[in-house]
Amino acid sequence: MSELAKQPVPATTPGVDAPTWPDGFARRYRAAGHWRGETFGGMLRERAAAHPDRIALVDPAPARRTWTYRELDERADRLAAGFTARGIAKGDRVVVQLPNIGEFAEVVFALFRIGALPVYALPAHRETEIGHFCSLTEAVAYVIPDRHAGFDHRDLATRIAARTPSLRHVFVAGDPGEHTALADVPCDPAEPLAGPEPHELAFLQLSGGTTGVPKLIPRTHDDYLYSLRGSNEICGVDADTRFLVVLPAAHNFPMSSPGWLGALYAGGTAVLCPRPDPETAFPLIGRERITMTGLVPPLALVWTEAGPATDSDLSSLELVLVGGAKYSAEAARRLTPALGCRLMQVFGMAEGLVNYTRLDDDEETVHTTQGRPISPDDEVRIVDDAGHDVPEGGTGHLLTRGPYTIRGYWRAPGHNATAFTEDGFYRTGDLVRRTATGHLVVEGRAKDQINRGGEKIAPEEVENVLLAHPSVHDVSVVAVPDEYLGERSLAYVILRAGAEPLKPVAVKRFVRERGLAAYKVPDLVEFVTAFPQTGIGKTSKKGLRSAAAPAEQH
Ligand code: AMP
Ligand code: DBH
Image (cartoon, rainbow, N blue to C red; front, side, top):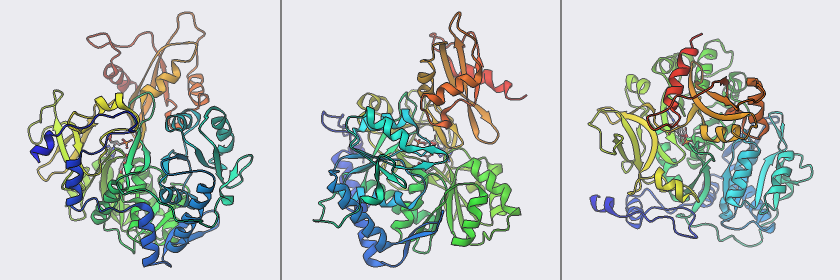
């Protein structure tokens, strides 16, 4: 181990999209049985052979549709053949922006079969984010719904296609307008596809990020499938599990902790929930006999409030996972009595490391900690500002390395140089302490990020947009405490000398019109004449945050 730890990590070399695990580590993870040489395409094929008629997927709205394992497998093959016929090949990137509908699983398994990489956009993303994903990845195709949540994705796709030379196809689930209907793509498979190798990339996941543009996270078949297997074991996912996908299916948490992919891995059933509110989800839990789901803390609060009064039958629900942002012990204590099921806290990141409380942990541990890592080979270090290990039990920066934690972002060598240590640990930006039982407690955050109820905002991205406003001289976006969301965003704006006065609403509109996802639009806007400064004259975000705190009290 100590010898391995000393091995240098290869820097990103030209032509290589991201650093990967050094050979010694890869060998060790294989020898330990973590990486088993499976692929997603192969996994689905095996499940379909083992239990063809079991239900894999349910899309309940508007008319209930189901997919058996055999049907999902066949759909993936036919769609893969259709994509191939349209020139989509192994290694190509395809931006997938679909809500919680059955086509999501069909599309990504078709791409897995080809070895093309889905790039998971969230339904909330707009022109700025999608444009960035498409150009950075040189995407050849973009998959969208026709309309979702009142927004016409086809118009957005037209604008994106016009500015992205690599983009050859827009596929639409539903009415295609000027684009191609996804329903017209499937065809009979011609010849078997070579497909990807288990150590190759399966997809690009999104990071909440701290920089001006979101980073892409390259995950391999081997590493992600290990995180699913580990998660399933911890959460007790098996063929009887009926998992409700409440959060956006593209997000790492509902996808893999243990998520809809975990449910499929175990031969269980994933049920797609069109909206997260109790009015939608509770009747679905009753009708579909849901056993497990995952929620962010604000949603867990809403469900906890609504649980006792509901007419719906929640008796099938066994386990609710809560994570994505800090869940208070007070709120955690109330969940089980309100919903009649067990609670598990989960602290994870799309970059890799996922921690869970365990089913045999005592109540206090489940209520007051964010769990411990999936794998015995997850290495966790807690260090001070100088990078030295803090004394056991002390709070410090969480660094991690392991069999399902990336060694670098995709095509981001500059950022990788600071986001990872020289020996390959990912700097999570989270401040944690470890209890005597090895559980982690999230105490805060050192990275410049806002966690808006589990939705991550990189202030720099919003600041860059606002700096383009002709009346804005400078801007600083910070988190302010919020009882419900945990945090909200506040934009402090310094106007240009002599500029027309602006209203907060105009500032918000500007961000929206610039094509950022709605959750990134500042919740609050305040005009100031100067920012507090740090010792060396940089804007002090700490100073701004503490200036904001008292204002919240009235
Ligand atoms: P991302 O890198 O966008 O996948 O977001 C992962 C980040 O979400 C972590 O680094 C934490 O900052 C935050 N996070 C996730 N789960 C929890 C949790 N249970 N408690 C506190 N913060 C969390
Ligand atoms: O916030 C996250 O990114 C997250 C939370 C819980 C995550 O990626 C996960 C579990 O896998």
